[in-house]
Image 1 (cartoon, rainbow, N blue to C red):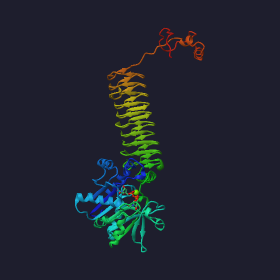
Image 2 (tube, rainbow, N blue to C red; image 1 turned 120 degrees about the horizontal axis):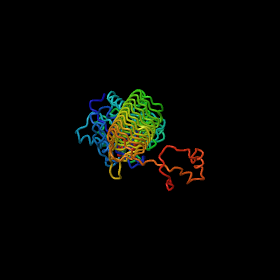
Image 3 (cartoon, protein in one colour; image 1 turned 135 degrees about the vertical axis):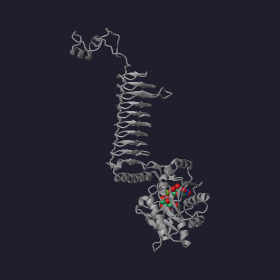
Length: 500
Ligand code: UD1
Ligand code: MG
């Protein structure tokens, strides 16, 4: 567990030039959360006494995000107006903390906002090793196949860490070192406070490097040590979009595995993307091509996919969603959706509801056991228990300026291809005939028929399309021989009637 007095400072002020983005680097999301969230969440995992984020480039965006991040503990924001280097950034973090609490004591852990795979367990190991070894500085390192771009860990002949050299400042011999600086450190607070002001800028970038604190502390006679991360991936930083995608892949693998070990069947981990905060009940099955985005929670025994995206959705148990796209929808126990359904925000499906193919629903409630099986749009509608909405039914909820509600009671039967012109109410147990355009409320138990009556021009084809294949077909079927009298009410030949 955490040391008695541990502060974590997350450095997140850099511009992230290599991202080539208008968005500050640490606000780029992976697994549905900004990079800086991952860094802060890992830090929060060791329950530090204080949690500090040093912000600079694009800090309005970062503070705006932090204000809404209810899943993080309170964060003290330090400001680094100009990005003069990681050493300067750490000093800005200490300044913010001192302004809040006075003297800083104990252990100060510094991490980077762009290192999203770092786990709390690893921070804890770092803090423990730091304390057990009585170090003044302990750096988390990793041995990697390609150390290009990273600071290298230079060790003495006896194996102790002597200093860190940045890639761009390193000579060939140093560049051959494959042990890299993760930019995660534990410092004795007093040593950090004492050495930071002495960090110079004589390096290729003219910046104040936090890495220089190691050599300064060592020169002062303090113990400097290192913890080599078991999994080098944890120390990888995001500096460009290729690394962003690579680390997102690794984080996703981790998340998928966590759900698998918790009892979720995930048929194709490679094509399944799950955001960090998603919850899934045991014995649920994810088919290939599923994306579960932030704010989604899924109950037990659900079957999702293939090729389905859920964002901000809450699903009960035993729900099936096939090839569909759903945003901010709630789906009750035993309901099923799709294929090819589009559930938009504020859609609520109660238990056992059925939404079928090519159905779009927005801001509507579908009652228990109600069915919307095919080709329908429902907007601003309420559908009661057990009602059946026929194929092709559309709520005309928008007059170009305002939206209006459609209220459909329990056990209502709406015939296919009907248009319900809102505001309109269909009371419990009412019927709407197929093809109706309903503009008036329908009372309980009534049948509304709101369509043109069918009429027939007897023998029209034989007269007006006499030499056509249509007329031939009609004659073959007996038309014109006086024997035929099909269903329908002849209305007296109206030769002017034309379908065209
Ligand atoms: C840094 C380390 C390098 C290490 C690598 C690991 C230094 C000098 N170098 O290099 O040894 O191998 O991380 O990923 O520390 N930041 C600020 N203010 C600044 C500069 C940076 O807040 O003035 C923040 C950035 O937002 C970022 C972190 O510090 O979160 C690291 O900065 P970055 O520019 O990515 O450093 P690297 O070149 O990756
Ligand atoms: Mg970096």
